[in-house]
Length: 408
Image (cartoon, rainbow, N blue to C red):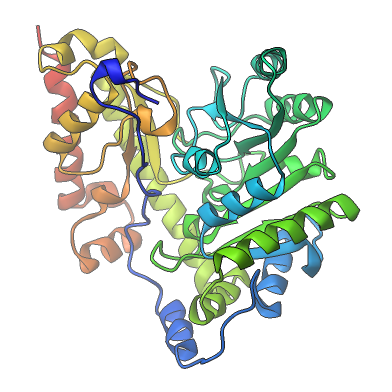
């Protein structure tokens, strides 16, 4: 949060998730259109077809799930809001940085948010020692730490925490009695799936972990909001699911019937969906790697992106050059780069990072061209980096950073 002396006030909203930047699959459009004539509403929490499809999705990833462990909602934000409310009072811990939409849901309920530093090698999870220290400090100040939200494939850093780091964080949270929400929105967007070992927290502490999954990460366009949550088995998990469902019902937060139909179809992972996902992941991986090369060539820093459609750059080494352009904090940096790149460049302050730090999330979808034909051509190209419009976009990106590197 910003403070008033800085003259900007608090950060009240965050940027949307990085978009896929690709035309919607015809099969998905056909299913949505075919369900548009349904007059009945989906029941709160989702109908059987959607819940069964979600259960099958998790089962194929080694996480057996019964229908009565699942709840669906029109997007991950209302689902996290309902889940946080269902847990009752208490403080919430988030890694720093974290997804931009997490903290607003918590603060909407009047809960306190505590950001915990992440390990040097990744984002998405808190450093376990820093987590324990933060929990002890909250309790010493009279607070009640209740919930930890983390991510196994992270927005904004595009990193995947090593299994041992994730395990230590989950173990520390469980030892302190915290419930864990694992946001796995980007789990299916790994850049090198055969070389990346991803183990979810629900496999480590099944009684204390709820898995949250927004379909806009990998399966649906962001304009068709749908998300699902998997609750722990047993009485405690069932009670938490029931309370979450109560909140969603009170909010009227139900997935629309056409979106529920297409979500169930996508979660069934037919060939056209899985083939597109593999190709899209490969394409965004190449774009993210190329963007990172441009960032590093200018002398800035960025961890290797391993998932998603973005990367997180730290421009601290370029602070003197940026200061000459009037850039002194993350909001200034966001304004500066957005104007020069003509693409979204949300500053790290929107992700709970230090507002004084010069960090920014860069998305890869603007590099794919400006028309449907250009973006489809990126998918079909043997090497999309050789396409003229992709090269132009990368040159624009590189020149903006080179200007800073070359500044006296």
